[in-house]
Structure formats: structure tokens, C-alpha cells
Image (cartoon, rainbow over all chains, first blue to last red; front, side):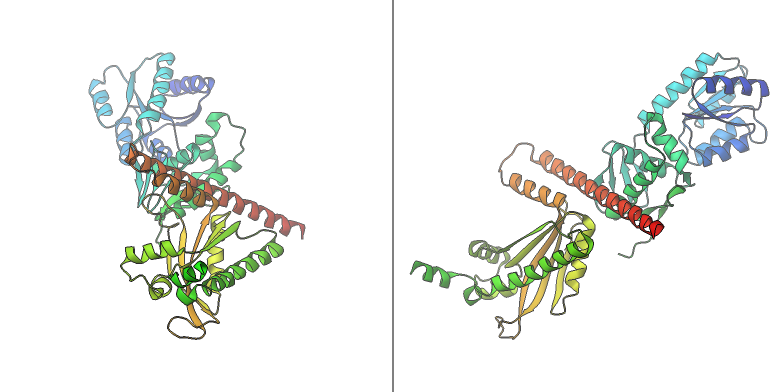
Length: 227
Length: 219
């Protein structure tokens, strides 16, 4: 599980990192809103924890920009007790929860667990990219033909379709799909599954293809077909 | 005596004895090709093939269904599937390899082809159909020599074939309950099998790349 932590307060940041690491999360830290947006767009997180008080771009604006870029990762805002209007605005523009400082670490951990649990359930709508459609509930990809895909293929396809604006590294894909299962596979498995999907996209006549070579980064792109 | 009558009754008329020779010619070419590939690369391009001359009865039924008179001309000239060959392959790519081989025949041409693999039928059916027009050392019905004859060739993988034969069996049970559900479930099975076919093809490709890399290293 990977968490983006955007907090400028040195002391708070240090204690949050310690607790999250202790609880088995991987943590990326940033100290301002601009860096948070960059990280959110480049990497894949299970949850983002963002302090409303951030330099350069404040927390509210950061959430807004991340959501505008189509990222549906759960976001937990950290706010001052006085900032009621900030909290309302934060939730309205796409944050999923907020915690008022000072909060207990137990409460933050519970909130993270709840967000991650929930995001797995409600991100179940069909995804579309060019003529390609991924039906998550049926585990099917559709274009000219339809075919069923396996659970792991489906998660990989979903990952690629939710991140069409940037390349995803083999390591990140492995982390997002196989690492969680504590599986015995090595990163080689990523290329095998990418290969399956490359062929399957072609087989259904999709005008989208996965670009990238073995061990490198991958992205879903639109293709022009001769047919 | 009864045999004699039956023979003259055939919708294929004097071509009744010619069509099996056309079939044998095409079948022989495919079998030799398969044997050569097996010897050269250690792997056959197809698993097996089945052939048939369409029975008199079903050819007559087809003439009626398609609005042609029930005669020899319709059976061997208008309808082009009196001679039929079905080739069953282990892997998807082998299908296209065999089609490319058929294209190399200097005395034949593909006059019609339908790729139901790239564009599956609505019910999930997948197969590659083509009509071959081939020259044979017999007079055809128009009096040409060598004569023009036709054959339908269907190519599919083992998975596509097993789906088609199972679906065929179930289709003829009339008045089943939940017809719509059954149809959509059968399609789901076809789509799952198609996915497996591609996974197997991908694994074979990955193995082949691995082997050729090893060859490069060792040489």
C-alpha cells in the first residue's frame, strides 16, 4: 500500500511518516501543493493525505487540480479546528474525508483503511478509452469483439486505463497488482501480462495499444488501424 | 440396380465422381505442407483436418433455402461449398500461416473470405471461412478445361472448434427455458475461450523469443 503525504509542518510530517511506515505502508512525502500534484500525476497511490495548509499551492487547490486531472484516488484532508469552511469546500471539490488537528494516529489509520476498502468497491463503473471498453464487473474488454480476461489482467487493464496521461513503470505495476498478494512471482510477471493484453487488444480490434518494452514503462495509446 | 438409380439421382450428376478428386487434391496439398513444416520446424501447423462432400440431401435443402433450382449447376457452380475442408489448428497464428500458404497456389485463388476471428459473430462464433476456386484436370460444367471447381475451407483453433460443436449440439434442443440467458452464456464461454487462445499464443511467442535469444547467445 502506497500513500502520498503532503504536509509542510516538519514535526507532524515526521510523526506521520513514522506511524505509516510502522504500519506497513510505503510513503512518499512532499512539502508543498505543487509537488503533491506532480507526484499524484506521476505515481499510483492507494490514498493521499493532504494538509490544507501548504505553501505554493494550498491543500484545497491541490485537491481540485488532482481531481480535475481525473485522479480518483481517495484523499484525506488534514485541517485546523477553525477551518470549517475549508473543510466544506474540500469535501465539495472531491476530498473523501477530513481529520481535525490534533487527531489520533489510530483515527488516521482507520480512515486510510476505510478509504482503501471503499475505493475498491465503488470504482466499478465501466472504463472507456477510444473504442475500448473495460467492463469491470464482467471482467471483459470490448471493441469490435468482446473477450473475457482474468482477474489480474483486468486489474492491469484498469490501471492502464486510469493512467492514460503518464507512463507506469514495471515496478509500480508489480507493486500495484502483485505485491499486495505477497505473491511468489517476480517482476517478470508484468511483461507476461502486458503481452497478454497487447495481443488481446489486437484480437478485439481495439484502436488502443500498450506502448512499452519488457522491464520498462507502459502507457495505453490510441492507434490508427489500417482496416 | 438400386445403386444405379441412386447414382443418377445425385444432384451432382456426372460430377459426383469428380468432386472427391478435387477434395483429395486440396487435402493432399495441405497434408504435404503440414508434413514438411513438421519435418523442418518440429511443429505441425495444424492438428487435424476433416473433409466432406456435402450430402445430396443437405445440398438440395440449401438450394431451396437460397432460392436456386435443385440441379447440378446450382450445386457445383452457384453454391460453392459442395467440397468442404475444416482445418483445426492448435494456435491462432497457425490459421493465418495456412491461409498465406493457400495464397501461394498458382492454380487457385481465394474468391471470398470471412474472418470471423477478428470479427466474431454476434453469438460468439469464431472461425475463418474462405472459398477457393481451383483449376483441376477435368471439364467443368461450363465446358472449360482445365475446369474451375470450388471448395469451402474453414480454419479454427481447437478451442473455437470445441465451442462450435458444443453450441451446435445445444442449439437444436427446441423450446428451452431461458433461451436468452443461454445464448448470452454461450457467448460468454466463446469470449472466455478466445481469451485463452490468445494467452496460449502469447505464451508460445514468449517461449519462441526466449529460445531464439538463447540461440544467439550460444552461437
